[in-house]
Amino acid sequence: MNSRDYSQVAGGPQLRPAVRTMRWLAAIKIDFSLLVLVLSLCCFGLAALYSASDGDSGLIRRQAFIVGLGVIAMLTVAQFEMRLVRRVTMYVYLGGLALLGLVLWIGVEANGARSWLDLPGLPSFQPSELMKIIVPAVLAWYLSSRPLPPRLWQIIVAGLLVLVPTALIVLQNDMGTAMLVAMAGFFVLLLAGMSLKLVAAGGLLVLLASPLWYVFVALEHQKNRILSFINPYTDPAGAGYNIIQSQIAIGSGGVYGKGFGEGDQSRLDFIPESNTDFIFAVIAEEFGLAGALVLIGLYALLLARGLLIAVNAHNMFARLLAGGIVLIVFFNVYVNMAMVVGLLPVIGLPLPLISRGGTAIIALFVGFGLLMSIDAHSRRSQPPRD
Image 1 (spheres, helix red, strand yellow):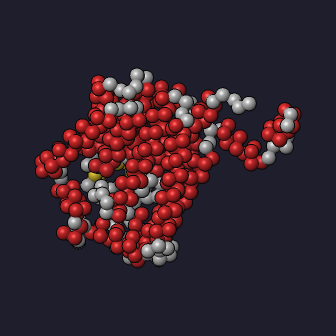
Image 2 (cartoon, rainbow, N blue to C red):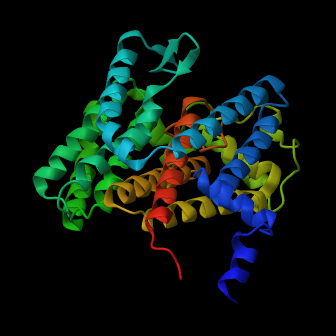
């Protein structure tokens, strides 16, 4: 085929609509596969929320509105130049710390945690959720401008960048989000090539310090959660109630589930926090193992696409940022599902894009927007094909 024929097929007036659409999406920095996977998970979440809330149309409209805002945020962030993102990262980090400090001063308390700001036009705004994206960004900014793998003093500085927001979130009594923020920083350090010997030494230190934390630092409700994880039937009507009801719901779903809206545990309000932390139990009861595997498959495809973007990133800052975002989403999904089935203690983490949420969903969409921007810059920096 000569160049004239090729132009008529691939770039001329007879360009097929599908190819023209893909080129248009690429021009405005939209990763079509990532967009489809994210929206598929959101639709799955809206269906699960409808059932978990017993058809609460107000809740569904609110969730759909937040998803819409998230899509707008994602597509907007996707247009950002990576140079701009890198330039403003430290300022965004300092602004996030200021918001965390403001929460401790005038924050709103709910469910024992002071994590929200009630601002005009932004009720129930949770700054700690944004730090799950900001912390990997600031570590990528710091480490990418220095020789890798990082030296010990660089790891110490990076650790301080993680420790400050983590400590502020711990003071809000939100241990689940604090753990995610700390892990976000750890993942970036791991991707940067931190010594595995140092990782092993740190893990051993944490293991040895755990009994001291349990005896002298852990609050009563945290101790109860650990004891109920070991044996939930020691307090079946108290600390062990959540996990017992969750396991009953999952087991009763069988392979194909009881049907949409037919879950007894969720419909009769036996499952606590059925539209937030324990929504996976609702899905397993109504859609069974098959539905749970479909959900896990969607997450796996989403994470695989994100990892491919990270591998193909055009520079170290983009590679560390993309890898950190993907790994923190994976960790969040894993911890929530493991918590619901009883493999980990209950720590209060929602299921990404599925559970009811506000700031958490917007933060995730911002992260996906950054992935789209990284992918667009990577494709643009590749040499043209013959």
